[in-house]
Image (tube, rainbow, N blue to C red):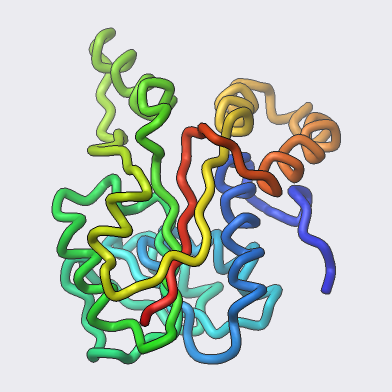
Length: 233
């Protein structure tokens, strides 16, 4: 199978591209059949850039109707739904991917309970969230505070940050398969990259591609983001 690299990712968001590849490598190892639910799929970038390359059957779920309209171009199916009240039957789903979504939802307990309800026995759950161990360096919340201070409107911020112990406790019907911290560098590269004029971005991507690929292949004792993968008992 063709090795994925940053240049295969169509997004200009470095952290999204690297995150998609990190999750994609795990899905590549475990996927056999059935639909993969992308909870909080937004415009479907993960399905577009990664899952379609693996031939996975995909179902995008998001509460934002405008995003779902864009995502349906890449998904086999789409559903407009609240992650706290997923409209799927008990034990009906093989795999769920939930990337950078839980931290934006007030009732994350309800979301995790819903995952437990709909995932089949031996099914997989993959989650990425902001890590608690470097929460003070979270650039999303730093930017939110700066904008708020200078009177600029901003609604994009993280309600909370997570430790792996939280998920192990809440997901008692699952076994932890893998977890790691990542994003020591690329999340800052993403912010700086966004400030660069578009005419020179393609040139920069040639030089920054190796950094992105290397970082997402290793685990760090500390990181801005937390990746975790579980298998239902």
